[in-house]
Image (cartoon, rainbow, N blue to C red; front, top):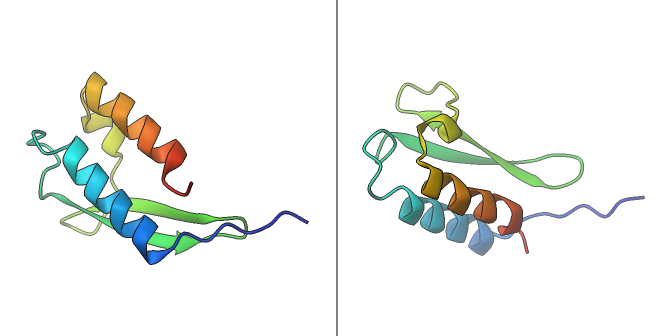
Length: 79
């Protein structure tokens, strides 16, 4: 059986803070999104929503540099 990895409140807040830092100069995303965290059978996960409440694909709005930083954050936020 695989152990479930649940993110702590601190890990979730750190994710929000670090993501905000990554996109601080991005006018397409800055102040235009919210992050929702949820639990799956294996781990904690998250999704992005726009101001209209609809799911958004943030990757398409990131610069190459932002995308690289997001990739690192995405792979390490629960460590």
